[in-house]
Image 1: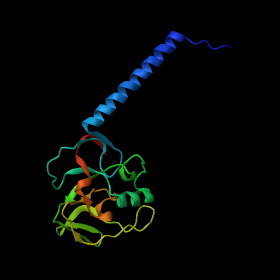
Image 2: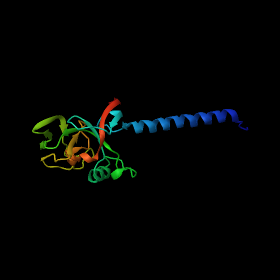
Image 3: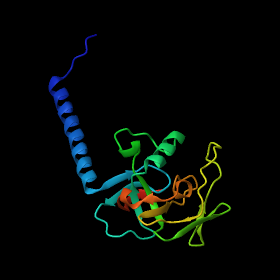
Image 4: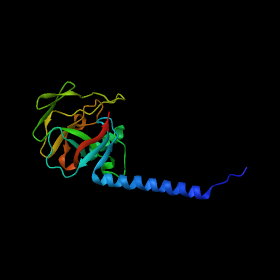
Length: 183
């Protein structure tokens, strides 16, 4: 049995597929240029976030999109917390976290609780081991240095400042606001 191909119909299907792919690709590029990013991690709501690269000052409670330092990225990649992306700075995708500590604030740990300026952060605990039973890094109580931030999320398995300390403000790519997210 010989299969007959309707050449005009096949041509129309190919043109339609190329057109749809081109539209999606160009729209995605434009939205990326506009600052739209898709968060896939579960430490914050999954979905679309708008990154503002022209932010003024950063306040507590702001979400920030930042490039992790090489040490943070290397440890996260080695442990499997972060995917290794060779085309990205420090081989890691930027991270999205919430600012809890500004320069001059103190951060401390009382057993498993995380404290900022002596006040326990609700629903945030520091784990001794990760989900695979490996020991988590232990950082000491300290003061957030000038030009640094202390960042967290409420997710119990989040890889954030409770395990790697502060992040440089110079690594902030922008502040973030949720546009269309879900839990």
